[in-house]
Length: 475
Image 1 (cartoon, rainbow, N blue to C red):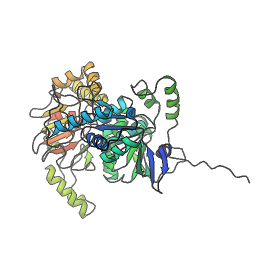
Image 2: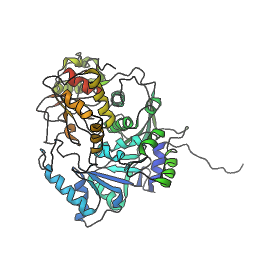
Image 3: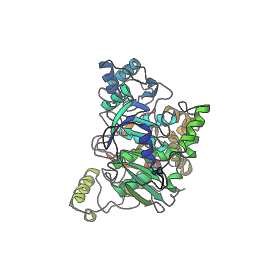
Image 4: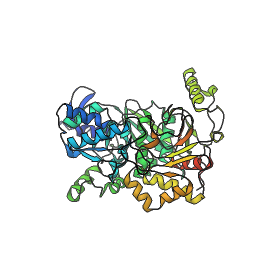
């Protein structure tokens, strides 16, 4: 019998890893080629200043980018000054370092400025099949396009800037397959919150997760970005979704996307980026979403989620003593009681924004609720809507969405991370209760003793208008 060549069925993640592998360093470690590097002013200046101090240059300046998003003020009329201690120093230092190294900077007044994980796909900097890193844990967002994207530290970013390579430990692969069809009022945010609830906040540790199935295929590209965004809340290395025709249409015509003949070749390659039918994953999970309800968090971890009309779990329902202790601490911090419905809890503030839910489709969904219901923000509730980028803000204003939010009692802000995290800057106030479209709800995430309930834009706007936690959103 002749010797034949065996073709091994491969996962999408493994294909991208192999495409970018410069050399194998050990059984689990490889030197990978990095196609794109994106920085922001909170950590980017550290990487750039390191290069300047060592008198090194950026190897491929045309593939390195930086934006002002984490520390910038989002109030109208903003400048370099911020409420965050030493915030101005971060901004000025990053601007200087970006100019000195010659990389593209989307500065505060730039029309394309915005949250790094929002502007990266909308400008075509992130594309299917590319490897992309950023000193930010939610870089996995870009897996929604079929990119190999993950967060790194500032030192790793500095190394990649100088060499276009990075030593990376290879994760195992997991596929989360969603069966069934999502209800009309259930969003990608609800889908990922439920997934974290089912698998736990550590359920993806050590894995690159491919999200798949009919429910994922039905999502828009922006919704897929939301789904992959919170792979980090599963503790995963990254999340990824195979690109399809929706992704091709989304990427076409973006400023940094290939043009003409280069587009033809790139799009053909992108359409080949999918796991082989016989590919074997190290772990597989199947989740039926047919009866999935909008999700709301009750505690201090993204896995502390329940159906919006369910009750906070009782300590007696915990699986073991450790879980009971964790629940007890979370309930004490959040000021909630086991067995109570979330509608028992009035809110003080509502936030629509962040790299998870600040895209045009998110703002449209919330504005549509306000239009349909004629509802206004409840008395005593402070509500903010912060577009994820200058492009999103302009598009929303062209559709009149800003007027819808303003007339309903929301503040309309400039692009940035804003109230997603607290580092001594702007806050809703000490100890207040907030419903938020952000991705994290741990103690102090949005301010001192702030109680954060994470939810979709629909649930957030409904709660803002009701004055208490609810996902009652008549269609």
